[in-house]
View 1: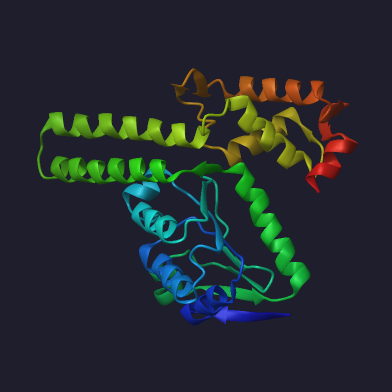
View 2: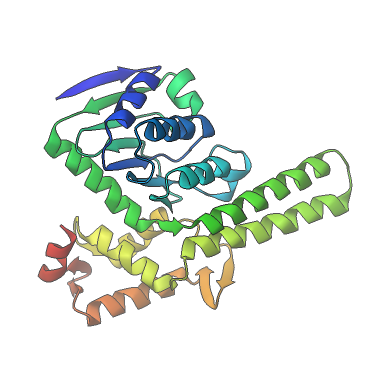
Length: 291
């Protein structure tokens, strides 16, 4: 059964959090401090802080962190209060989905921010059919596997970088100093590299792209050119044609199509994908593993 959720929907959000016994799945490009504290307080009052598992998928792109549409300090506070919180970073994320166990799922236009749940004109649907809730949860977790896990240490690094950049940006805006403007650009470039390093999470480019290939081919066969388009859509920061970043010996940027070809060759040799005509498809074995 489904029911409609108009704005403001803070009451329905609290009801969903109150219902979570074992797991909470949160999928939102933007995450703010207020809703995170609502989660923390509700879970604390129910004595589940050390029990509940939280899977949170968001967009930690540098632009979002700098303008605080995604608040890094809120994520740190959430992880500190609920230790079994896994945060993953997927830059192409746009879905807003919230799931408590198999009790209920809210699919909505609203980000996890105070504006989203309290002020903006949003609209959503609450679904409580167990089979549908399970399918929604599993679908979000499939997206999540395409993202990169972000540790508490990395969140702390991000918080320091963004706070520092804001200070430099404010100083640059108050003056016409060319030196300060150049310093801001330099630090912005360094911060961008740190974000990409976290996205790579110590993995090779072709390993990241192999996961994307398997994800895409589970729906239908694709030609290489289509795979390239879709992989660039999933990982725009790692497939930037305008720059060649070398991080820990790995190329992320202009040479990304070479890494995709390497991933295709590896997956074919290991029997996970095959080429039929001009299209790639999963083998029977790997298709069953993906479903």
